[in-house]
Length: 112
Image (cartoon, rainbow, N blue to C red; front, side):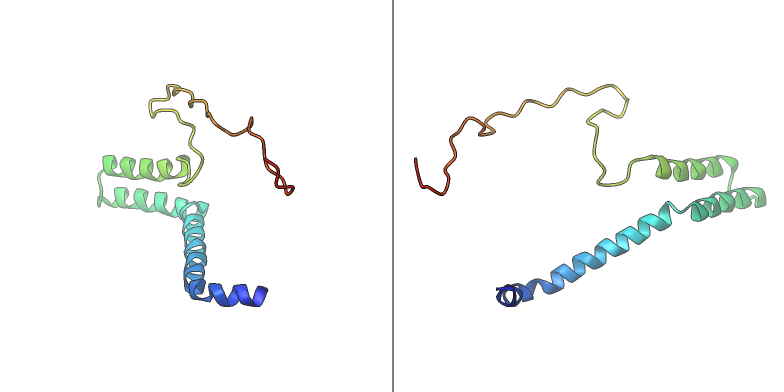
């Protein structure tokens, strides 16, 4: 059965490989983005550019704030709390109906 399943899903192998590759690249990019050495290097680069007069102190402050915002915001795909940006609590989620808990379930016996 495993051989048959492998043969039937063989055309999808490139898609599975590409998906795995994208996951690896995304994980590496995220680890580089949040690596403390890289963050410190970015902040020092901003300080050097400001000291050399290449950028204004306001631009340096904006750059530092961007780096800090990147570190403090939740990662993409993280669970959302449902609260608006201003911090006020959001409305509770509506109750789900029709979950099927009261329905009779059929077993293997084939009964009604």
